[in-house]
Length: 286
Figure 1 (tube, rainbow, N blue to C red):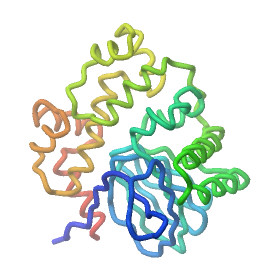
Figure 2 (cartoon, rainbow, N blue to C red):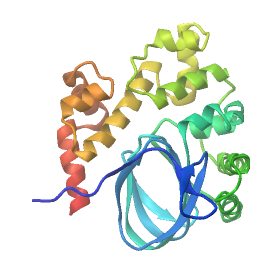
Figure 3 (cartoon, helix red, strand yellow):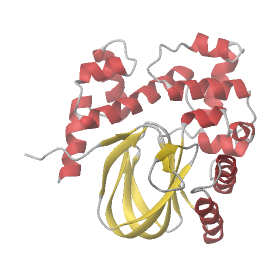
């Protein structure tokens, strides 16, 4: 019988203070490390940008798996699980920031169509391969973030995201009302809330039809499909812990009935929640 691998659900962000002992909340965190052993499945409730500086590994999320080598960048939205194996002298950076930052210090990003395209990609994870010159500039920004004042951290993060956004293969999104982005951020922050398309449109002060067009333009999804996808991503992280039943997870994530949750899960991922959880755990523990 395969034992369950360690699964970590990270919540919130912390960084060392000037003495290196106590820890305090931080708007942006950037850390680097070398890995020669697998990094087990984990998930968190904040954004994460993974950048490979050297070495190699195989990186996997619910969207699939691929090589992670120098210049590889993986942008993970909150609620996404991921892991690495086949690590060979891997040196990588992880830059993390909370969902609330999108409505606070990083609000300027919501006005730049290229950054909107980067941050509103349809999947749970976005994978990009950077040219060498761009990677070097990104590493400069990453190295400047630790222990910097919060306003410098946020400025460096915006510059880092801007460097990456320029090299997206996808088309640049057209400008959309900032209120639409704030509404989608609210869904990201609390996917289990009883959202309705009418309520989100009202929050954005738009008609339902206009709001739906903006949502599809940004995410390739209807508003209702966007809500369901965010709930399913959250459910996947909870399935990995094994601490709740499928029925409990369904209700925790905002699904009215476990049977509806199971149908949505199968439609998106091709298997039942329990079968998916068992196969994923089995692959990690083998």
